[in-house]
Image (tube, rainbow, N blue to C red; front, top):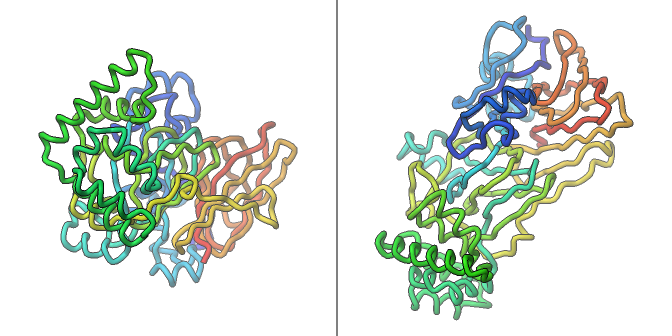
Length: 422
């Protein structure tokens, strides 16, 4: 069986409570194949589709002519499928985890540790930090996607401290004035911002709950009177409070950039970058790790001290957090998202309706191909037989193997391919 290097995968669905239900969920639409009746009848949330070899969600090889095993087991048996550079660099492990997310309610104020911190947290608290690996990640919007990412420019944070007295009450006058006086000095700004954010996150519970209730009451009354509450970020504040009443994370919107991604737009989340996903559907790729440090808007384990200590306190506008893709000079159907980490890259493959033949090119890295839209018959000398691809199909492609597609849908195809471009 060593010669079999291209095969379909049956991937793992995570039914977390924050996920979307039925036809609202891109994950459900992919997994259930767009069957309207199945989508209508489905009542559990379809939050994440895991495509990879992580122990928490190891994909199953779908072709029953290969003895039943997971992708992780296959790679352990045939590590050469990764490609020699990837195999040697990442010690015989698939270095990335590929996902689709469908977010209905906010998904935690969080950040991911660098390698050094990840190893330390895993050694100390393995039940909360299951991996010793870092977790840089990238989100590419499939639908309109909303999130928080990175600290806002100073003028925006100072504006909220002026316009939202309930927020200022949590920070305190001394820390707020220290932040104001630090403007223009990047070193002092980072220290002052860390002090302000840490004070808020460690605020005595009665104080922040009282201030949050006052803020919610004030904004609700303003909106009922037809007044504009945007100076208090009112719509988002009320939405987060309805999802997580009495949660300190509601105030994080005054520190962090609000991101609104259109389909195809992306944001890269490096180590120590504060962020949260708020709503929408995205493709996500990350280093193969499940390490997340959380501090709000979540029922899961929170670690406020670690989060406040680790964060990158460099203010920047939301536009600076967008991560651009680049069109491939050799293949106009490919748009490459290539982040500044070695673990992963993602290609968006957009085959126009006019193209009926397409070749998924060979790479020096193993890859995982996800079909978002369209149909095709896939053929490869490295596969056991022809493979029917349709919406939701997932294909593992070993290093140095190409796949030929006979496109059968009249609207072309949209696919994403995760890989490792060393």
